[in-house]
Image (cartoon, rainbow, N blue to C red; front, top):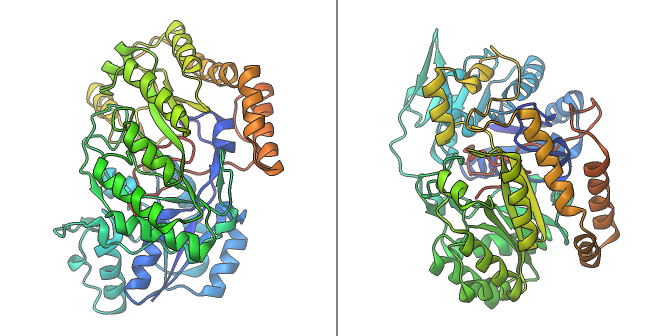
Length: 497
């Protein structure tokens, strides 16, 4: 069969946890989940295509023209909760003209499988990873159409939505590498990118930590082997001309020996690559950071969240301010640039506590900081508590099309949403407008294109007001980067912890 995957563009949403300007500039990332699904389909003997309409700047009509050239038997889409209705518009338009079945996947299917299949335009849904489900679905579409035998499938039978069991164990190391040959690899970049080509990787699934604001908390850790990871990096280098990789794992150095093995294999192969990753401050030490640097690591995004120990304890972060300070200092000493994620609007937040967190961030003197508005996302502990207490699930109603997009309440703080917006923007401007910081950033710029990108972002942040996007304004989409149609609700502007 011929399966075509479409990654459609998105506009800024009122329920965003990031500022509009941050979402606009942070980066263009490959739709890795669709690339994984395409690789799985190809491995099973099918023909796949990916149209990254977001990155290519294609509208519905232009995308339809490309699809007609490919002539697919089935269409595949990533359905995020945040962007469900917008993706549904694309599905409706394309299916109307192509008249082929549609299969959807993504994090949203784990939370709202029946609701996601409620629109008549959607025929099938993938509950878990696509590794077993997608090949079995394509085989049944070619053959006897016994959909009840497809593991982890959501499908319709008359007036019912049916979910099939998925008894197979997912072994992440068995997955093929993403089908990057179907992507415009030369167009991807993120805000701190210094080299091209750029891509992203995922080397592990899940996170056993307990952070109450994160949808991945208390999920099974499922890593790929060191050799598999480095082989994929080698493929990126040799086949796609990649020179910079951002590893999107929730927590890359989770298992120290695995991380050391990856670093030592990279050093042995001596690839012309630099890379970045996400880490907690309590999973690295001097030995590991030195090995990471020697193997090409140049940036680490740390989940810091707050400058208050009381707040860190409330959100069950499991770290201390002392650990944060020591790890950031050690990272800079070794030569890796530390970047920090912070939250605004945390439980018990006040104007004073936001200012305290910004002072703490300045004291750490990170190379870049990101302030996000804490939002009760699906599957997080905060979301579960809110639904239990109020009996109302905004995200479910939004997927069903029963409510318009809106700013979600934050009952855990006395600050209004408008105050949180203003404080978040103030935090960005206050941190990044310091003369010493600006001077250092100019010295670190490696190209004129990088300078233009960062200078424009700075001007937008300082001069423009928050608000809805203009019709012609391009925004960066949520990047669904877990393999085979499964998303961890990663976004291009708020990366995992």
